[in-house]
Image (cartoon, rainbow, N blue to C red):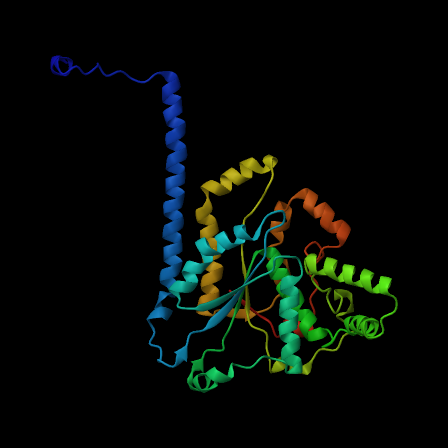
Length: 337
């Protein structure tokens, strides 16, 4: 073209074969990521819109919104930040859209969630529940609270620990005799000191114990002893909160790169699954417990690191053991669906 030539512009030519391949690959990857993120956002907004009608309902100035508890634990071989990010991206927006109050409880080590749940139930059974602050007592008497409650467990690990904790709290004893005996022995040793060398050794041991991370107490009842244990009849009056299993996708390892890549380009499917589980909890749609509910999230176990699972089996990890349930407890348990 003479006009383009006069402007000093070079003649248009098709890119070479190599450049064509390069731009095709870059364009396909970029387009796939943009499409997936757009669909993920759209799906998440759809689930938010389904529960948004709850936020539009009028609320008395002295009424408090419904509150749910979110249990989360780090995936095997990784840190808690992975689960926190999963919660912020997929779960939290739907809870906020439904105008729900929530409390996040983290189990940094295996067994912490189980111990927290069991302790809460034991405190209810013994009446050792902490009351409100005396200064806030007049205000608490005026407020109207929605006691519907609810529990969301992110990942298979947190879900099975919650179920274990419910069984331990209702089927186990209200006081641990073995721990009481250990405390009595320690108290006797402190009240009756012997030699100076022994005192120094004891002080050194105490300093080491303070520096060491706090160990999670073992379960007060083994799953094998569920059938022989007597359930507290007050479970009929203090029914456990309904529970929802929230899916979590996480896998490590170089060999799993193809699967990780596929998950990276299809996060919209995860957003749909998580949105469905979270929306059911926000709306409050429940059903009775079924036997297959104990297998929820079992597919996550296949994605856990092989080395971690081998070590966990050697140490008798709770997460690796089969989830044992008791019909006397599960008949009072509801599941969000």
